[in-house]
Image (cartoon, rainbow, N blue to C red; front, side, top):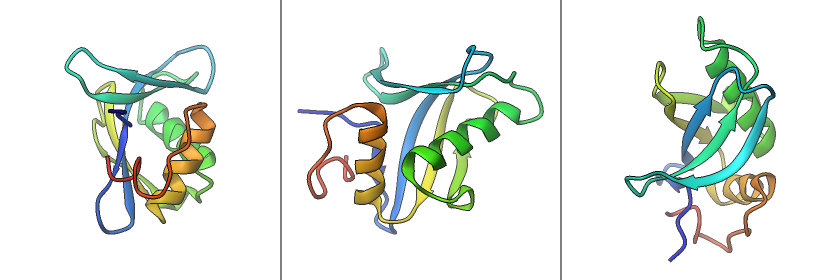
Length: 117
């Protein structure tokens, strides 16, 4: 069974789990990983330090670009001061999941398979 770091919430929003590394040398989405507790996450890094919300803002801008969404469609739901974050991407969850899968270099999901995970 394949595990994706996102799930649809039923209201057209894709909920994404991310592990963010501030001061990571560059802004990049580095693929997916499974944590020791079994949770799947997107590995992300940003150049800026985790001060005054700069790293969170850089992450949200990067996710918006990868998902083909305006910045206003991306919001941080939890993990404001932690490395593990939950981000909401508003729009067609299946389309967003497909664009994220492409950006991350993972196999694209068909229909609801990845969006509902």
